[in-house]
Length: 89
Image (cartoon, rainbow, N blue to C red; front, side, top):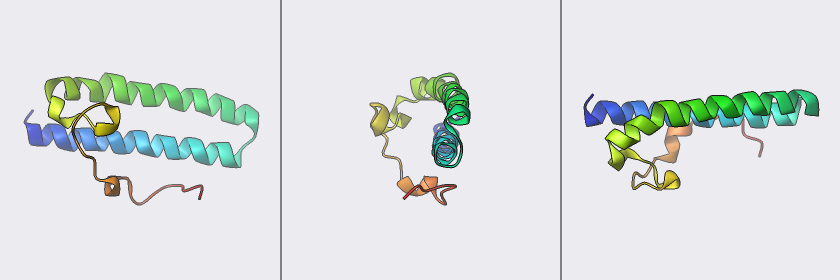
């Protein structure tokens, strides 16, 4: 995999985690506590898998792609997360 290919994949995985996070906010705001608790645990596992099992190996191989918010130097354009699925604001 080239660096450019790794960058595209890394950004896709970051978008995936962002979308999962939005779905969690949606469920929290639109469902009861029991369902929210189940969903929160499931979405947390999914986010961990995407982050640790899929993205982390890319960032180990290409450390310059590790996002700033995760201790790296790569500045992620916030526009990659648009359009939002759900914005609680």
